[in-house]
Image (cartoon, rainbow, N blue to C red; front, top):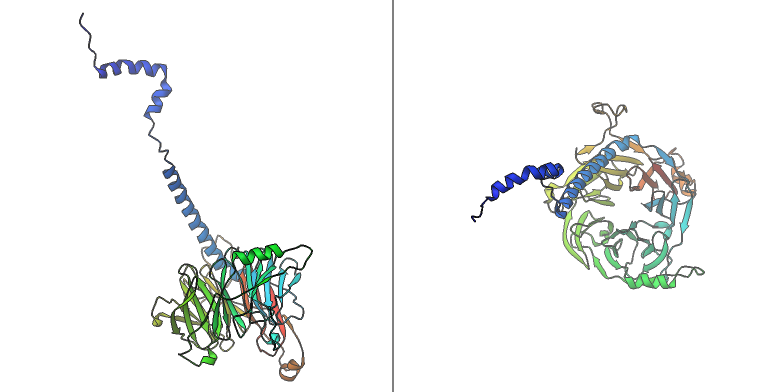
Length: 452
């Protein structure tokens, strides 16, 4: 009997109507396009979404940073008889830690105005000579990247003191390095900090796991917290061959985390760049265009530039570029000096010796101007009047001690502006803590306020 041969195509054609009649849903599914179920594709889609969200939030922060200065209002705090606030940092959304000329470390609650003083850490062996703390005080307060440690000056202003956060329990004191006051501190990693001193040296200090474990063991709730003493890992002098060696005082430090480079400004008018990792290695030194009273320094990570404050200018320096590329802008307050500078988004906030806060737009390359009026959010643009003055906020009255110095030399002057020695934004960028005191060194007073 002959076998009946049926082609596969014909057999499929005969079966297809029958199968479709039995299960139309199956036929419809066959016509749908294939769905990629790769985990790699899913992650790629999430990354694109995340990048879009990050760009949106960054644009939003930039817009807020540009509009905020014109809307800030001041709330002044009472700091009693403390003398001049030189340093400050936000600990959290409502607490700011401050250091004063009278060598007081304190925490202020910006919600209630309550002040809590923190005990100072002493050297292992107190120096034989009595330290003139009234003439120095605490010039630097810095938090490490993970915000678990705080570095500042010790009871001896030549020493560096480290506290644990958020408790502010003492950890250690570095008391064998500098022979003069510490002016600036910068963390170069989560466990290593660099201090800059008036003696022209820079010290590298490491808070090791061993040091932290020793303080953990010694922490007894029934006892006063104890702390250990550490020695410097490196101690380097800034170059002195260019100028008078007695004027080579390290005044300010700022760290570039991307390249692991540390910028330093000295009072002889030089900028020094160091590689700061396990050691300090000098890379370059360059003369600044404005050499008088270079006392503050900040680094803009997004813009890859250092901002240096001098007597009447803010200079922008990129170490990768020739010296001729250094750009400087006048503060328009000659003689009083730039006392503090910081980056937030594209706005550089400048605190002056005359108690002013100025805001420089690094994108527009000019100081922000005062708006003629504030309109609603539906308006297209807020345009400043032509020729109108730059936006300037002025610190409040503060407190001034009418002591013998004031009576002998300043009693005929009605009002002294409070120099803005320190300012810092909170994590949201909507609150600006500002502090300082009278500019003349002989006057005793203070100012502290929250601008929000």
